[in-house]
Image 1 (cartoon, rainbow, N blue to C red):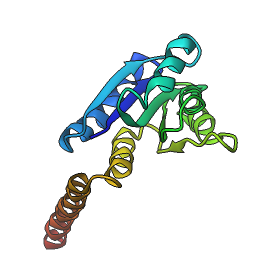
Image 2: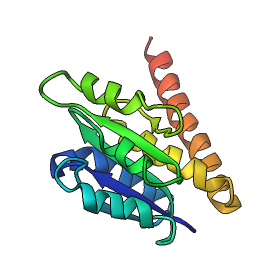
Image 3: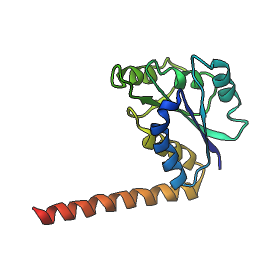
Image 4: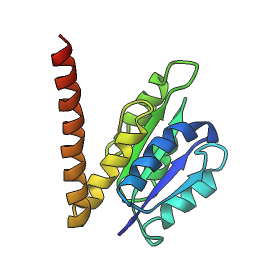
Length: 162
């Protein structure tokens, strides 16, 4: 199975990345996590992206706040799918990061999840990998069923109460 590469712009993004790594672990998807900044370590970020395919990655996730150029910088240097996670900052509640992540020029796409959406980034990465992996596709189907069951159990509890 191909790995998921997770890059965060700062270690302050780790709580959001933890949501992604927990989801990937639950689906038994291999991954690596790195801290590279589009601005402070541009050479290392570029090298990671350029070599990602030959290093066994199938999807990349990039999380950054504020200017949030990391996902775009990664996507500019690979044709692997890149999923951006805009991270909330104290300045503009993550709207700056969301707009920076989602407003990519034609030719350099970045799939973008919600602000602080680490779990959904991992699920989207899993869905991409599952296109060529029936066992993973089955795990995702089973997760959907289990998630629905939890909601229906909550519905039954609330309905009984009222």
